[in-house]
Image (cartoon, rainbow, N blue to C red; front, side):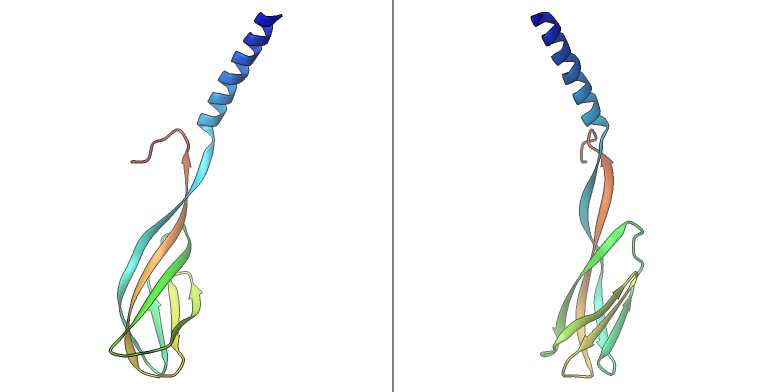
Length: 112
Protein backbone atom coordinates (compact mmCIF):
# COMPACT_ATOMS: atom_id res chain seq x y z
CA UNK A 1 0.00 0.00 0.00
CA UNK A 2 2.85 2.39 0.85
CA UNK A 3 4.51 1.66 -2.51
CA UNK A 4 1.33 2.53 -4.40
CA UNK A 5 0.92 5.74 -2.39
CA UNK A 6 4.52 6.85 -3.00
CA UNK A 7 4.30 5.91 -6.69
CA UNK A 8 1.13 7.96 -7.04
CA UNK A 9 2.72 10.93 -5.25
CA UNK A 10 5.78 10.73 -7.54
CA UNK A 11 3.58 10.70 -10.66
CA UNK A 12 1.56 13.70 -9.40
CA UNK A 13 4.77 15.57 -8.57
CA UNK A 14 6.21 14.97 -12.07
CA UNK A 15 2.94 16.06 -13.72
CA UNK A 16 2.81 19.20 -11.57
CA UNK A 17 6.42 20.11 -12.47
CA UNK A 18 5.74 19.63 -16.19
CA UNK A 19 2.54 21.65 -16.00
CA UNK A 20 4.16 24.59 -14.22
CA UNK A 21 7.02 24.75 -16.73
CA UNK A 22 4.67 25.09 -19.71
CA UNK A 23 2.44 27.81 -18.23
CA UNK A 24 2.77 31.39 -19.45
CA UNK A 25 2.85 34.42 -17.23
CA UNK A 26 2.28 38.08 -17.93
CA UNK A 27 5.19 40.36 -17.11
CA UNK A 28 4.68 44.07 -16.70
CA UNK A 29 7.54 46.13 -18.12
CA UNK A 30 8.05 49.86 -18.27
CA UNK A 31 10.31 51.37 -20.89
CA UNK A 32 11.26 54.87 -21.89
CA UNK A 33 9.16 55.94 -24.84
CA UNK A 34 10.29 59.45 -25.71
CA UNK A 35 11.38 62.68 -24.08
CA UNK A 36 11.59 66.23 -25.33
CA UNK A 37 10.49 69.82 -24.99
CA UNK A 38 7.12 71.22 -26.08
CA UNK A 39 5.58 74.65 -26.28
CA UNK A 40 2.14 75.74 -25.14
CA UNK A 41 0.15 77.66 -27.72
CA UNK A 42 -3.06 79.22 -26.42
CA UNK A 43 -2.72 77.12 -23.25
CA UNK A 44 -2.42 73.77 -25.03
CA UNK A 45 0.23 71.45 -26.47
CA UNK A 46 -0.16 68.16 -28.34
CA UNK A 47 2.55 65.51 -28.19
CA UNK A 48 2.39 62.88 -30.93
CA UNK A 49 4.56 59.75 -30.76
CA UNK A 50 4.83 56.20 -32.12
CA UNK A 51 3.39 53.91 -29.50
CA UNK A 52 4.45 50.27 -29.26
CA UNK A 53 1.63 47.83 -30.08
CA UNK A 54 2.10 46.04 -26.72
CA UNK A 55 1.67 49.24 -24.71
CA UNK A 56 -1.20 49.09 -22.23
CA UNK A 57 -0.83 52.63 -20.94
CA UNK A 58 1.62 55.50 -20.72
CA UNK A 59 3.07 57.41 -17.80
CA UNK A 60 3.85 61.08 -18.46
CA UNK A 61 6.08 63.41 -16.48
CA UNK A 62 5.90 67.17 -17.13
CA UNK A 63 8.41 69.82 -15.99
CA UNK A 64 7.84 73.53 -16.69
CA UNK A 65 10.82 75.47 -18.11
CA UNK A 66 11.46 79.14 -17.28
CA UNK A 67 8.91 79.59 -14.55
CA UNK A 68 5.89 78.19 -12.79
CA UNK A 69 2.99 76.62 -14.73
CA UNK A 70 0.08 74.47 -13.65
CA UNK A 71 0.19 71.75 -16.31
CA UNK A 72 -2.12 68.78 -16.59
CA UNK A 73 -2.85 65.95 -19.00
CA UNK A 74 -6.18 66.74 -20.64
CA UNK A 75 -6.36 63.62 -22.80
CA UNK A 76 -4.36 60.43 -23.39
CA UNK A 77 -4.97 58.52 -26.60
CA UNK A 78 -2.92 55.91 -28.43
CA UNK A 79 0.13 57.80 -29.70
CA UNK A 80 -1.19 61.24 -28.70
CA UNK A 81 -1.26 63.26 -25.48
CA UNK A 82 -2.93 66.65 -24.99
CA UNK A 83 -1.37 68.89 -22.33
CA UNK A 84 -3.12 72.00 -21.00
CA UNK A 85 -2.21 74.76 -18.55
CA UNK A 86 -4.47 76.27 -15.89
CA UNK A 87 -3.40 79.91 -15.59
CA UNK A 88 -1.17 80.61 -18.57
CA UNK A 89 -1.44 80.47 -22.33
CA UNK A 90 2.21 80.30 -23.40
CA UNK A 91 5.31 78.59 -22.09
CA UNK A 92 7.74 75.72 -22.53
CA UNK A 93 7.93 72.41 -20.69
CA UNK A 94 9.97 69.23 -20.78
CA UNK A 95 8.25 65.86 -20.91
CA UNK A 96 9.14 62.20 -20.46
CA UNK A 97 6.79 59.45 -21.63
CA UNK A 98 7.15 55.90 -20.32
CA UNK A 99 5.30 53.01 -21.91
CA UNK A 100 3.81 50.36 -19.62
CA UNK A 101 3.70 47.04 -21.49
CA UNK A 102 2.38 43.58 -20.70
CA UNK A 103 4.63 40.87 -22.15
CA UNK A 104 3.67 37.20 -22.14
CA UNK A 105 6.61 34.89 -21.55
CA UNK A 106 6.85 31.21 -20.65
CA UNK A 107 7.81 30.76 -17.01
CA UNK A 108 10.61 28.31 -17.87
CA UNK A 109 12.60 30.99 -19.76
CA UNK A 110 15.18 32.95 -17.85
CA UNK A 111 15.27 36.75 -18.07
CA UNK A 112 18.31 37.95 -19.97
